[in-house]
Image (cartoon, rainbow, N blue to C red; front, top):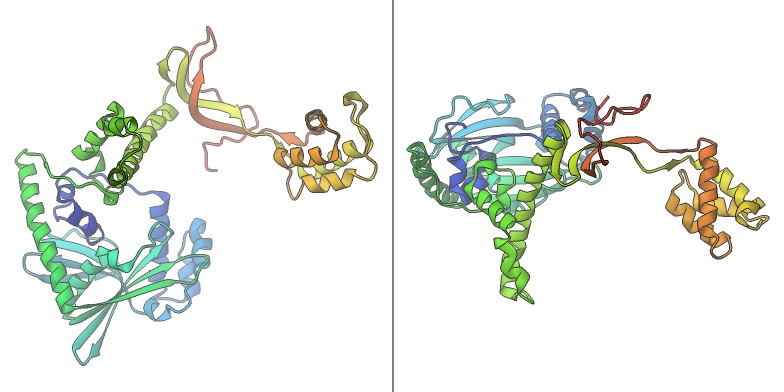
Length: 431
């Protein structure tokens, strides 16, 4: 865990739950975090080199996503200083610049400082003094929210105004996306608003310092506040509030009263909704851990003949579109004496066209066949068509490797999952 209390990006959580800074921390990155980091690096590169050269710096797997970003109208922001790291000292109400374009390198930050990295920073002289500009890039749908609720921007305005002597700070929240023009939100913060935010920050800092000192003396925090900010909290797995929630869910204490009531009182609906959301998140984490253990080790005995583990099986049958068109047109046109399907001259290709597009699906086939064959002949016709497709090699079942619950065969030994059939690709590998 770092010596400093919080980073700028975690200030919102820090203000909501002081205990989050005292518990042990564990950090991890998802593919979405990695994608956002790559997009940020690309936008930073655009400030120091040509668009084409910046695009060449992007890893192959994310190049298309960056190339498709619509950057119309934000050229001015791209030309300003990018990735400016600042450390704000809460006790002294001062700030210092740590560097530009060096990433989140906060090694020199002390306990009384809050480090942050501003995506884009600029300033200009106005009659009232210096007016600063802070821009925060966001990508993806989950980050789209009102600028007033993004505390990270308040923190940036405070730190930058103290570092560069601004009297006003304009903050911008810019959402970039592959399919839409940038969504730009603006807000101007006066020195009074910046000072008001500092007051809130100082109060939280004093509380957090007291909680951290108690934790160092062996006394665990007892004050927790749960909410949406918990989902990415690095202290999540050590949080007593989450542990208590899990125990309540498993014992059904949390929902027992709600399940007995009919109906739930209206004044309890909002609280129950929040409880359900938090419980689902906790349980999904527990489920992920169990599935991870079942995937990487021997099957888990669930009792009786039930096990949880990796199962190699064939997936849904896939039909070749061209072959399906020909076989269905032939079947409808000529009929089939074996299943007593009458011929329908001139209707074969019409039925095939209704059932297939670029690819054929069983649902599409069933729907089309019912319209072109006599009553109660739909299922036999479908079975006959699939038989013909399989005979022609136009129906395949790709192998898949999944973790799921299964029953052991009587007298069979349970061991590690078998290898995939010869010649089939391994779905667990990326190459």
